[in-house]
Length: 218
Image (cartoon, rainbow, N blue to C red; front, side, top):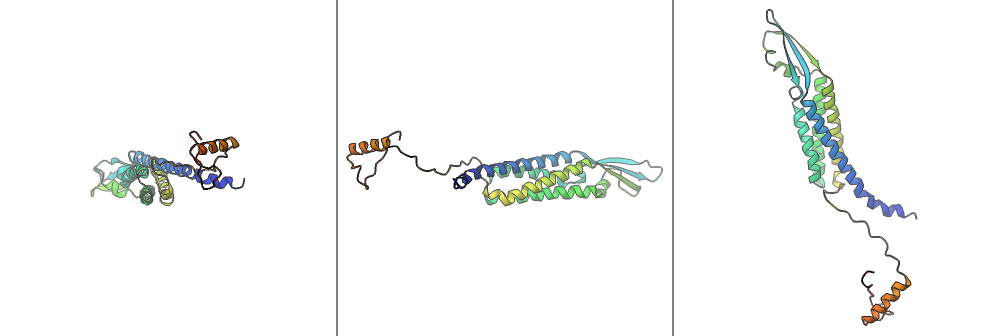
């Protein structure tokens, strides 16, 4: 009875690998979707005070403007998630590292914006540059940079799992066969029937060198 878990273990490994592959693919795809969603939103509102009599000028920065790497990283994560289904072996490790790098870019982008690093992007807005500007105020919407951080963390986690574990995962459409079990126990009637069939073939059923073959359906 103690050997039963050992025999069952190989049969469980393919299913475990498929579950890991599915989880990483879904995680990478979700990270990419979150990154693209965040990049399409407004991340910051910018107001520039100018010398009188010029009025203040205001504008907004989208995620793609405040963090240009966000959109590219989201697309890479989506493509990498699909690529995991098409490649095998060390190819999955390479794709996993690419996913982790894209997730890292999202993390850096979110931290940079939350840390106030949007001045350069704000200066490129129409009317906010030039020598007439005396002061610039930037109000960052925390929600979308934080969403980019979540997407980045998810992308890094999924990528590292793929890089470490991906080479052992099954390929797409690959089938697994169970380990052959012990031979079925044959009854006395089955052996007697095999002996008669051996005699019909002109074989001696008592001869150890004679190979008896079960008939059809056995």
